[in-house]
Length: 279
Length: 279
Image 1 (cartoon, rainbow over the protein chains, first blue to last red):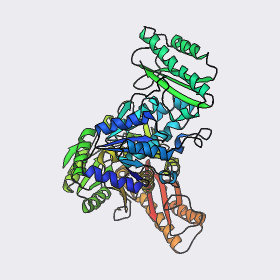
Image 2: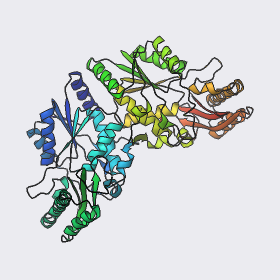
Image 3: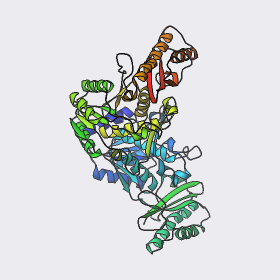
Image 4: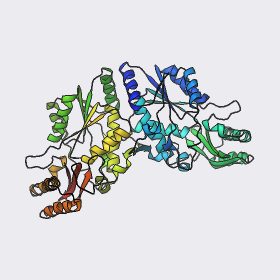
């Protein structure tokens, strides 16, 4: 595996690969890799000549009150995992490389960025979309892979790709879960053992919501209330939101149906977790 | 010359050219071509294997009160000119192709977009930057060519290219003028013969400003006042602004020097014209 830190280095490799008509699979990450990332990588390896992973903890997607400083950065461990997975290139730039002095250009799908996670985290998706666009321009991938766990992120990126005519296919890969059902996340390391136990209730409530919809319940308010009710037992859970949305554009549905996704976000202790389930 | 109207058509051509390692020169225009555009094209033909011109009157860069509807669209004449110049490809999409239903992603360098022209025309540069980014993604040019007359536009595009790591070189080509000094513009067709005569005062005032700076005048306020004073004689001219700016980042300078550009904008009758001069 070759490690590249500079913009010019990455551009040169990309340009050479395209001249050779190689397909490039790309997985942008913030590091702290887990089995969810590894599944994205194995999808890429299966379907492309070359696989590029980036590790960059992107300051632009954290607000000043969020957990940028404490976000885990186990770089040596990450590198070992990527070597084992036979990734071809790791792009690992520093902050000054990606955001030099005078940087001022941001991009974002306006509507999608202001709902759900975007409402709870103003500016978050402008940060996400901007760094992903920059990375796409540098890596010029044929395919890019994102985890379904960050469902709104997937939809935001897909909308950006469509609107800006980017020549890349976005692949959404199902969430990887621990045996007990907890969605893998780099932030799970922050959970105490008690918090971790209670965090399972998020997925359980999603399963409950899905079961209710599949059983024919159409009343969104009632479904959300039952999910909420289920969560009441777990005292370490502070719900941010449960929403049932259209799976294409994330508009909030009035009548629950099979074309929906249920999204949930909650603080577990001090750690904010998100999860979702497609009906 | 081949004419392409679809996104897929343009992407296919671009991708094939890159596989053959051809260099692509690109000139994005809104049509109504004049000798200024032709100079951009001849620069491109000199320095690239293939030259692509786009014609697209971009609604996103006009505000509702501006002249989108009356903007000239002499398409057949434009095509003839491009044929004569031996342009390889004309990309001529329609509005729905570039802005399909649900379009919502805009990009812009925040600081540069809110000063000068951006202050007078809110949203203008977001419209410009977004369409240029889309066109760059479709045409994937090695070089792109812009006229110096739209100086702030050139700086906005250069900043976007730098910030988003776009693999294209931006070339700024000096303004082409009529024999009497009027900067060529597609909007000049709107001028009555009397307006056209008075419009010459814009360039004359720029020459006056440059002369004052080269003679050692450093007092920005005084230089602007003398330029303004000169324009007073011309009753059809309604000045919007004169500014003396740093040539790199368009910050307003406190002391006039050779690293400056003087920018002027005025209504001549109902037509808004812009011009500038580099010291």
